[in-house]
Image (cartoon, rainbow, N blue to C red; front, side):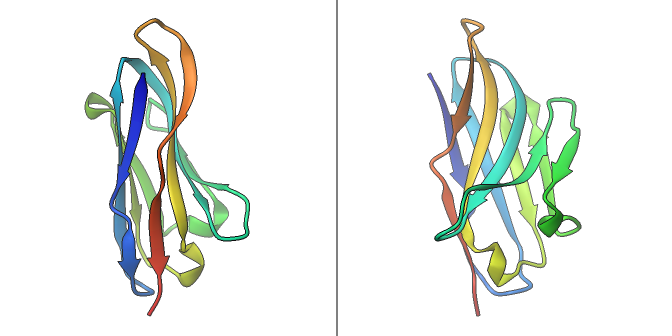
Length: 120
């Protein structure tokens, strides 16, 4: 069993910053890709940023230059540094991980989500 637990969400004013973290725990052999998604009210869940085990990254156009994804492989943790936040960044943010567990079985896991609200 593998769990992903997010932290770091909250309320911030426009132009402010937040740093999200997502720690994976459980019977983990290896984690491949990790990423962050978000879902705003009335909208579909969308990809925000992704990172491979080797550190390759990709970003949604809407967050390029403002958000930075990183990971600590030793701690099975992925981070999302969000700067210059805008009201349209308001959403529930979910982390995602592609995991091989201790039985070498592959599965995709999701965190429970953390609310980010950008408002004055």
